[in-house]
Image (cartoon, rainbow, N blue to C red; front, side, top):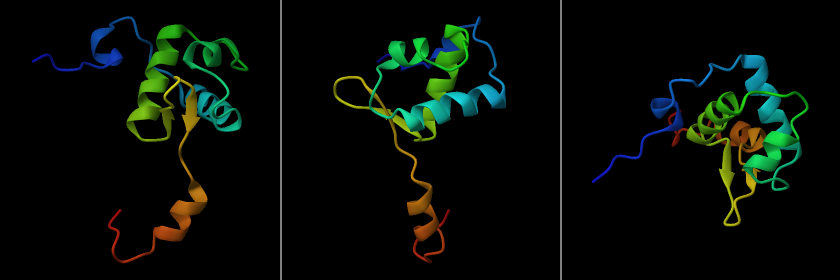
Length: 95
């Protein structure tokens, strides 16, 4: 059985994105949730980034459950800070 390796693990050329770049991509996805597939999103970013760097950012955001993909492959922003504020103080949830 093959283990599913991440883009970061298999690509030695991948660049480490700056926090500013990660936040720029995340903010763009939040504002345009469900409008773009991955490649279109990359081509419409406000600032250009290398494809490898973009791949690392997308994998990171998906791994922390901030983004996901719908059944057609559109990138969807999942993080909901208002909901988190409501539930963070509940005793049944240990965060």
